[in-house]
Length: 129
Image 1 (cartoon, rainbow, N blue to C red):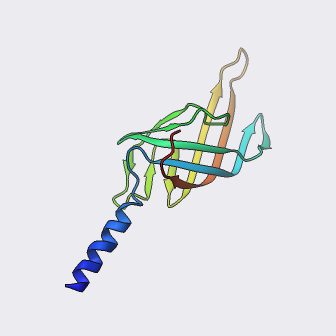
Image 2 (cartoon, rainbow, N blue to C red; image 1 turned 135 degrees about the vertical axis):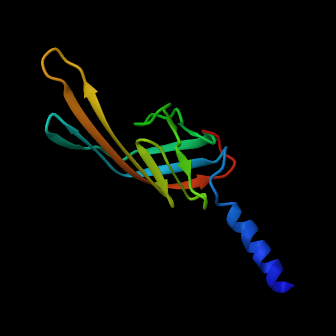
C-alpha cells in the first residue's frame, strides 16, 4: 500500500512540470547571431517571455526584444510534456532554440539573412505575458 501511495504522489508531482496551456516561460538568451550579407553579427543576449496559448500555439510577450508580439505554431508536444517544437523553434528540457532564414527582396539581388537564437528557460507561476 505504501508503495502505491508513493508512486501516486510522485506521479502527481511530476505532472506539474508538464507543459500546459497558460504556462509562462521566462527565458534568457545564451546566443543570438545573424548572418547578413556574408557577415556574422553577434547580438547582446536578451530576455523574453512566452506563454502556451493553446494546444498548438505559443505567444511571446510585448516586452522589447527580438520576439516581441510574435506567435509560433506548435506542431507537436512530447508525451513527457518537457519538449515541443514548431517549424522554426524547439523547446527541450529548459532550452529554447530558434532559427530562421529571411529573404529580403530588392531590385537587383535578393538578400538572405539567417538568424539563430538559443536560450535557457524556466516556467513561471502566477505571471502573465
